[in-house]
Amino acid sequence: PARGGSASGGKNQKSKIKIETKSGIIEAKVIDKKKVRIKLVNPQQIRLNFNLEIGAKNYKANFINTGVPHVVIFSDRLKNLDVKKIGSAIRHHHNFKPGGTNADFAKIQDKKNISIRTYERGVEEETLACGTGVAAAVLISAGLGKVISPVNVRTKGKEVLKVYFEYEGDFKNVWLEGGAKVVYRGKIEQ
Image (cartoon, rainbow, N blue to C red; front, top):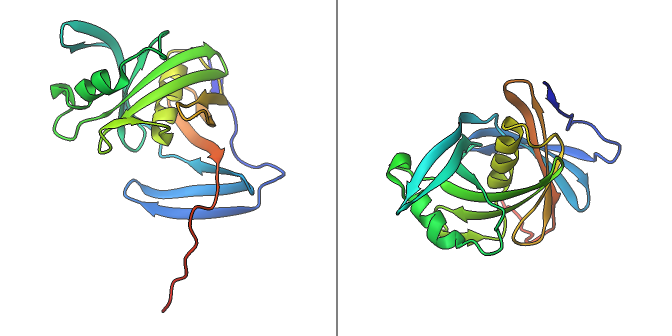
């Protein structure tokens, strides 16, 4: 069955921006002074429900590349999970060499809401939020038939991000929406 929703348009849309990244040109829409919506690349390399051995324990894992690689594991005990220990083991697991992977731990609340904790490679620690990780957890959840677009995701930093997508066997039009604030102003002189 088709699951999805539209992310384009909107009455409050003020401006469109294009950003060049290593993953390609990314579209962004300023929704209002406090919200921005970013179009992510279409996900690749999706693998659902495989066993991942960490130490003496097996985890039911999922993999997706949302511009960067992510392993997603579902847990009903997010609060008490040792994200740093398990996340680091996943990040450095031989299955994901040479570059490693991020590790996301998600709990599905209902068809429109999930919670997430993320261990990010490069930072080598749990972070307060990760946009591509939020998208990874939502898309894996949708691929398993557990959520429908749009989905609200509560991060460790208590922020709620929203993911929109279209899904009919493949994912497309994946958008991430969240808060935006000015943290720095600069001037380019020529």
